[in-house]
Amino acid sequence: IDRPPLQLVKGMPILGPFAENWKDVERFQARSDDLLIATYPKSGTTWMSEIVDAVLNDGDTEKSRRDNIFNKVPMLEFWVPGAIPPGSEVLDSLPSPRLVKTHLPVSLFPKSFWEKNCKIIYVARNPKDVVVSFYHFDKMNQLHPEPGTWEEYLEKFIQGNMGFGPWGAHVKEFWALRQERNILYMFYEDMLEDPKREIQKVIKFLGKDLSDDVLEKICLQTSFKAMKENPKTNYTAIPSTIMDQSVSPFMRKGICGDWKNHFTVSQSERLDEYYQKEMSGTDLSFRFLV
Ligand code: A3P
Image 1 (tube, rainbow, N blue to C red):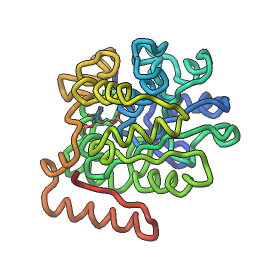
Image 2: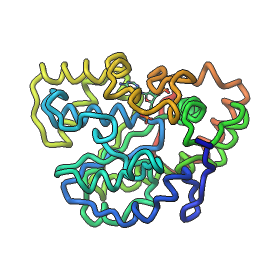
Image 3: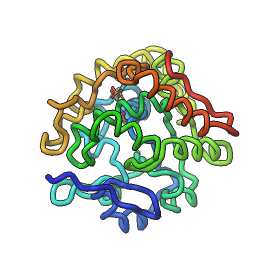
């Protein structure tokens, strides 16, 4: 595959193949019992997907009818021409209640999700760890543009010239909507700090009542170590022509603070400046170390 360039959709840079499939995304019909997992890329999408699947199956993902990486939690906008059908097509054929994941920013969300007032779990992660994770992901993912040098990449991130656009607008827009909409807003750093406490929030949001034993089991099953070893969650089912895990594994480090191994002092200050500017006037804030 030749790495396709980003394309603009309504002014927002989107990964090439996903942009080509845009009509399908817009045509998509939500159902009122759809449950959405929304994130800026590299913020814990796969982790939350596994948690939700486990919670809905009372801790037993073996029972889950979502048995592979494609149908587990399909991504609305995902598409590999000639290889993997559009996520919207996969979703059309699934029985309710469906789990849907998406990286779309609020401005590109299909209207029908709002009309049906679907439940949304949003996961946000601090921008320093996001850009590091995204950099390694872009290196290994052949559907993404070449990341260039780390220095160049960081600049692109700050300019918002990334697949799915700028980080700041993404996290802020969902934050602003969380009370008027059915949104559980979660933080990757909180999940790392106390998975049990955070999974309990998900259980409550989904209206479930699970025993402590089941909760313990879900914590174990959704730990980084377990998910890295699990072929249903570690993306090894995706052909290496798309995701070359010898370049960087999908389940890379799973920590908070790896940015310290990548940023120089001045790069860190540059991102701090961007962060301060983006967060000014909001009551949203992130932790950079846990
Ligand atoms: P790193 O690259 O920093 O390791 P997404 O699923 O949104 O693409 O996010 C991927 C990031 O989440 C990767 O971060 C990955 O390692 C991390 N991740 C996945 N599962 C995790 C888990 N169970 N616990 C902690 N981090 C996890």
